[in-house]
Length: 232
Ligand code: CTP
Ligand code: CA
Image 1: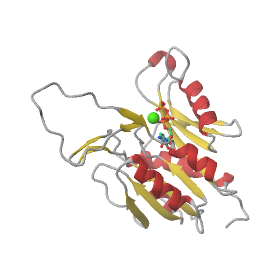
Image 2: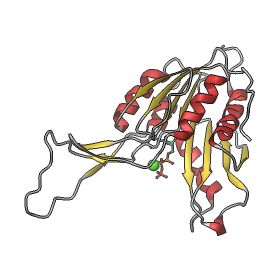
Image 3: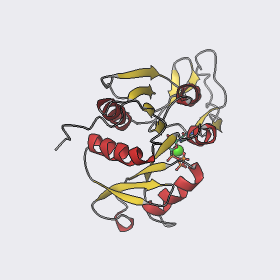
Image 4: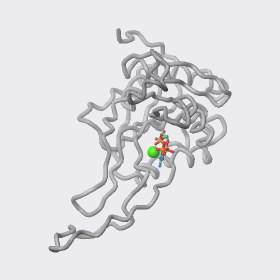
């Protein structure tokens, strides 16, 4: 069942949530993109607003989703646009949540005009690495700001979902990493868990299977005790 009444425990808190996928332009009509729907980020924004927070949602490409009630919505395209928006919006925030699916790579060159067929085989598309926005936000954060990342992981020959999640938490340096177990990878997964909430203090909370709203409620529940009680 969906949670019905939510506590107003984020009143006075300013939060910034990113959602959806970035689109990395190739020419005026084409891009490299991903299949992110944005639904989890929208649920996080909606639940935060319901709990009383002042919410800014920075949205890349998403499925056709209604703006979350009470949230201010900014639209971005590429990873670099998302990065600029997150740096600008996160400056005065109590919490920053990176739920967006950021393209790891972008085309090196953006053609001013539409790329045409030439009758020959096309040249390969050269890619370059996008900035790691989450790592940048962690480095730039003001004292007391809580920074949260997301990761979809599968187990593989080098380790299970939890192993990969812990390693990513360490690399990113954020306060909380929401790890979703994806794919079948049966032998590697722990049954009945949709994933884990991994905190910088080493705590690991399993996330039960449930709706995106229920996950959003669990994430905000985990963020609350990390908020500085004096900063409000
Ligand atoms: N992220 C980001 N900037 C990037 C890539 C990812 O801010 N250029 C953020 C995502 O929004 C997410 C977290 O980092 O909150 C983890 O993303 P993920 O793609 O799992 O991590 P990567 O470091 O890109 O590692 P991988 O090679 O597993 O894709
Ligand atoms: Ca990635």
